[in-house]
Every structure is written in C-alpha cells, then in structure tokens.
Length: 490
Image 1 (cartoon, rainbow, N blue to C red):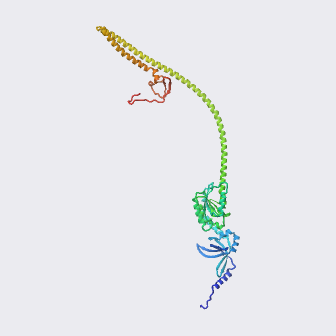
Image 2: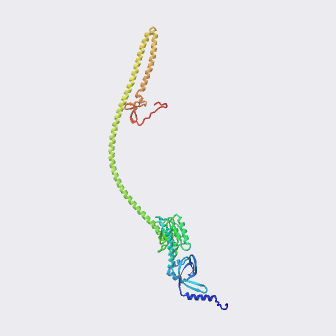
Image 3: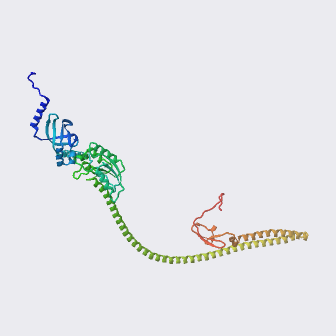
C-alpha cells in the first residue's frame, strides 16, 4: 500500500493550489463585506486585517492588501478624506476583491475597489438607532429647554487646539469690534481615533462644572466616517444632560451628526459659532442702544408734556394763590379789627370790673375801720362812764389817789386799745389791694366773682387775673385740687 501512494512536494502542492485559484478565481471579482480590524500603511500600500462576526462571535478572518496604484484610483473616485475615514478600524466596508494564491505567501485578497455607500449606510443605520434611543429617553430636546444668555462672555471650549477649526474660531471671536473681552477655558481633546469619544465625554462633564455661559464643541470638518464619533449615544447623552447650553461647530456642510441634534444650537463651522456669539452681542448692543434712544425720546416727550402741564398749573396756581392771598389778607385784617375791638371791650370791661372790685375792697376796709372806730368810741365812752361811776363810788378816797388810779387805769386801757388800733391799721395796710398787687399777689375772678367763691365747674370758664400792671384773660383747661397730707385743702 505504501508502494502505491503518491508524494508531492510543498512547492508542487502550492503550485497546484495556485493553478486551481487561477483557474477558478483568477478573472473573477467578488464584492465582500467585512469589518476593518487593523490597517497598516507602508510605501503607499495598505495592509488590512478583515473579519466577520455573528452574534458577537468572530466567524472569519483574513488579510487584504490595497496596493498603492489601486488606492490612488479609489481616492480619485471617493476623495482622500472620505477614503481615509472609511479605512479605519471598526468600520464595516464593502470591498471589491480579487482572490490570488502565491506559493510562498499563500492566499491573498487584493482590494480593487470600495463602495462608500455601504459604509455610509451602516453609519446612517447606527445613527438612526442612536436617535431613536435618545428620543425614547426624551433627550433630544432636553438642551432646548435651557435659556441661552443674551451676552455670552465665558466659554468652555472643547476641541483640538492644533486644528484649523480651533484657530478659525478664536480668530473670528476676537477680531470683531463689538466685544472681545471673552473668558475662554480650553478643554483639549482628540477629535478622531479610538480615544476621541471617551475624551469628549470627559471634557463635556468637566466643562459643565466650570463657571461658563456655554460649552462650545469644535471640529474642523472631516469625512462622514471621521464625524461618526459624534453619533455616539454616550456622547450625545452627556451633551443632552449638561447643565450648560452646548453649541456645536463640527464642520459638516450637509448632514447633521447626533451631537448637533441634541445640542442647544448647532452651526456648520467653528467660524459660524464664533460669528453667532459676537453677532448676538452686537445685536444686543444695537437693541439696547435702540431701546435707549427710544426711552430717551419717550422720556423727552413725557417731560415736554409734563413741563407744559406744570407751567399751566403753575400759572393757574399763581393766579389762584394771589386771589386767595388777597382774600385771606382781607379776612385776616377784618379778623384783626374784630380781635382788637373785642380785646378793647374786654380790657375796658375788666378795668371796670377791677375798679368795682377795688372800690368794694376799699368800702369794705373803710366799713371795717369805721366799725372798729365805733367800737373804740363805745369802749372810751364805757371807760368814761366807768370812770365817773368809780369817782362817785370812791369819793371817800382822796382825789389824788383816785386821779392816779383813773390815770393809771385809763393809760392802761388807752395803751391796750392803742395796740388794737395799731393792729387794725397794720391789717388795713396789709389788706390794701394796691399794696398786695405791688408785692406780687394777683386777684383772680370769674365774671366779677372771686374764683374761690364761684360755684360749679371751672373748666371752660374765662379767668381774669389782675396784676399790678396787667389784666390777663385766660381759659381754664383743667382744675386740680391740692391738699395737705392731713387731708385739708390748701
């Protein structure tokens, strides 16, 4: 049996395989879908690792080569930027392949063409899935509910500082004449590659903690494949949940990425974002200036109207006040004459009352003096009678002795009554009204009656007080009884 077996060398076997592949596949082209796993570029050639999977399990893996001559042809058809975006790990691509087998290098897949529409369709499919997921979570319009400041001065800027879009934004923002005192906090990130999405998410979260008016996310354009990072659900969720309004300037002229959809406002380019910010400030200043002019104009009109009204009222008040002043001057003069007449009458009446009071006092004093004088005369008469009687009774005594006794008794009586008369004279002198008034005492009467003799309530009565020089008329407002501690009135 061992004598009948046929033995081939490896070269013969591989040659047979090469002949077989050349015969079966040499002239045929296959359109194959695969996920790009890895890309290496060398000397203008691109070496790719492709794979296929099902239910997250790899089902196939192969290497493919895109020679430089084919790359240039495809680049002319698709565009350099788009082609570079398509040939990135993670993208599903539709390739036109030719299968070859080399005796030394084995099975080879040579890429002849690429259909970008397939990749774009896959991107769009994922994009729509993310949009539906955001819509279900009610995140698409969450940023729209935030109020954008009328004047944006403090900006949290997210982007790659080395890109032209970043530079264009700053040049446009600070070159305007309306306002250029912006405060910018830069959060540098990569906007392409595998680390772009995690860095963007982290930057948005960090920027939301910064004291800013808005967050601005920039990228200076790129292929659809490059911009696919902005269709990421986690990034869109972070943007939608930011406490600060987010403005995007991704740099895509036609389509909107998901980040644009969830942002508060989106713009086609970074320059457009900067222009919007400083145009808004210029518009605000113009509006404020217009409002200021309108307010000034309105105020001037109101002032003019009020001034005219004021002048009218002023002229009326001047005329009316002059009339009123003249009227009241006449009234006051009349009132003054009435007061003077009434005062004169009161003074004359008070003087008559005072004279009557003084005459009464003098009359009372004179009556009292006369009464006492009569009493003294009666007492002298009694002394005389008693003296005669004593003389008659005592005739038996010697005349000299009786005369001495009479003289002595008479002298004593006369001295005693002299003292009494002197006391009455002192009393009359003390009771002299003129002297009492000169010493500071006053006489208070109500309707000609001494105030202490008036019966009834005193409140509201007119009190006339006589001094040595004046007659004072006053109205009694209140009466208070004063008593000593033993309860006796004073």
